[in-house]
Every structure is written in C-alpha cells, then in structure tokens.
Image: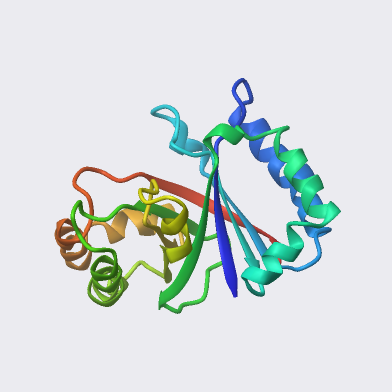
Length: 223
C-alpha cells in the first residue's frame, strides 16, 4: 500500500469549528467518490488544544492507495480534481505539506472506540545520516516507546525516499502516531518510567528543542 499524509492549515478568517465542520461534512463526502482510494482518515485536533493559541496545523489527512502508480492514475481523474478544487474553500494551500510515507507498525494493538490520537512531528538530529536515523528510530527508539503502558497502538511514518529527491531539506522526516484510550491515559502514561526512558533517548536521534505535537481524534471516511 502507498500512503500520503497531508498537513493542513485552515484559511485565514475561518474558525476552527467551521474548518472542521466543512472538512468533515462537505469535503469528506467528495473524497468518497474518488475511485482507487483504499482508505482515507481525517484527524481533527481537540478543541482544548487551542487554549494557548494557534496550532502549527489544523488537521492531518491520511490517504492510502494500492501503489504509487495507482495514485498517479487517481490524480488524473475528474473526481480527484474536484477534491483538489474544493480544498480552496477551507484550507490554506500555501501552508499545506504533502508527505509520502513508509509505514512501520511498532505496536500492533486495536484502536479503542473514541480513542485519542497523538501525532508527533519528527525531525532528525542535524548531521545524522538518513538511513542511520531511520534505523535508530525504528529499531531502538520504537521498542522503547512501545513499552509505555498507556499506548494502545503505535505507528511510525517515515518520509519516503522519493520526497528527499524532490526536496533535500523537507520540513519533517516523519510522523510518530500513537493511539490511547483517553487524555487521562495520556497524562498518566507520561508519569511512567517507560515514558521517561523514551524521552531520555530522543536526543540520540532527534533535532534539539520541542517538536510539534497534535492531540486529535480521527474520523475514518473511507476504509
């Protein structure tokens, strides 16, 4: 399967509520008409995430296709073009980011009903070679994070090699996505030794400073 992640920012002047409503209720049904899409998921940040101000993105869309060739075929259809045109009604195209990714399931657990979905933006440590970064994230850091008791499911989405051929310095090298039963579980999980060990390992492969995080709930539109 071939997956593309789209990072979205709402149009200036559009409220968060109106952005989320339009995206889910009007744009989502348009996507269901596109032939060849195997799965399509919208992740909406929780309203309380805006308590301290704007978020870096207002939504994350994940779209799966059978293969890159299947995506190329879909992108030429009238239905796909209609979806792209409709995007101008609610998203700021100048701030959108498209990420083709390779998905690695680190903890293959079931997603609880009404789960909280945590999306962390990943950028590798300056000077770290890409393949070394990918290997460390997947095979050393991933198992550490999977031990955090509150995590129900954990996926790493590594930016595909093709993206580096188009942009030698993309904004992110991937997204870490975890699902938890509730925000209360998220808070309790952050008090565990397993969480502390995971955080302590981050300087070994991640860029210094705080990387962005979105706390969301997902809506499965297709698949």
